[in-house]
Length: 413
Image 1 (spheres, rainbow, N blue to C red):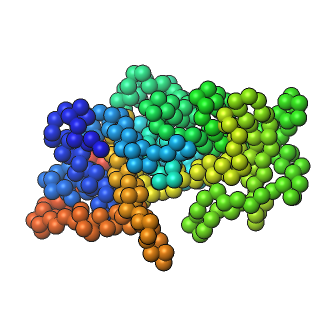
Image 2: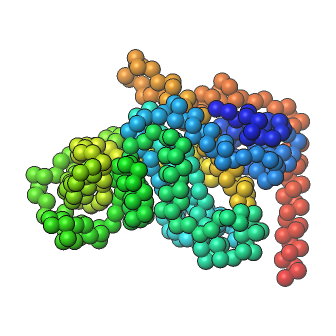
Image 3: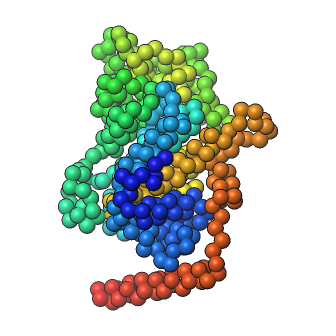
């Protein structure tokens, strides 16, 4: 990993601050804000950390590429799965770039939030985030030049749907030589014909979720039938029990069925159906591959989609992926990139620490346990009492100043 590369950080000061920033994200500091990270790093105030995210000269996209390349060196596999999904970052106010009232799975309802679209890499050796895009709402942001300018959004950034952002990230990864054989995503991405066309053109297989009202061609190739109606026609004997991966409570076992919708020279298409063994709830996937594959392969690819949900949970819980307090376009991408780097450190340590002859009575090292050990043996920092007292005074003084400004603004209205 070339975090110290001169072509990423023009000056040594922000390069050193970035290293301290990542250490802070890995530390046991409760909230990963510039204030708390600066205090842990021994700084007298948060200015260096804030400058790192706002105005320091360094290339966040190049660091993102370095993180991706480092992960691929450790986790790369030709049959790996690229997984795309979005997550929400709950915010107050209207100034944070891309923020608006919108649905987010983070809250399970419409909330004031930003939405980031991410790309994850899932292989037998591990899983990690390798790219990110900030979703910019069309009406409230992309059609408002004043808001874009105030948030520092580059002129070339225009409105793009979430599937379009996913297509950008997948193309960037594949053009960079990332080894992968498959792509998966939820219904938002499965509904986009452009994404499917891109993958077929590149010869990359996919298992993309679709809605129950989606129609697919059967029989003569011209008859369109709703996928939930097709599911009703499947005989009981045709459902097969498969696990789509390990879960918190054991293997995620479901009943699966598949229907071949087209087979031509150089391509194979299927409708994959998943049924919950307890509730009977159904889920549907459009699948394509340049070669014939067994049912279990499609099940494994479809099941990989849950990996990115777990990465969101791990990123927010372990390295503060959602702890930022920044409003600008540049600040968002820089913070998220450094958080992805911190998560990559934990992922690679966990992947390389596994021993083939490990005690079967002990589970393998998790990312959370790796971080706990890292803090106990490597990152522990003893700061003098005077430093802690200085920061207590600094915080309370800043909070008093902010309160006075708030009161003055209210009285002026």
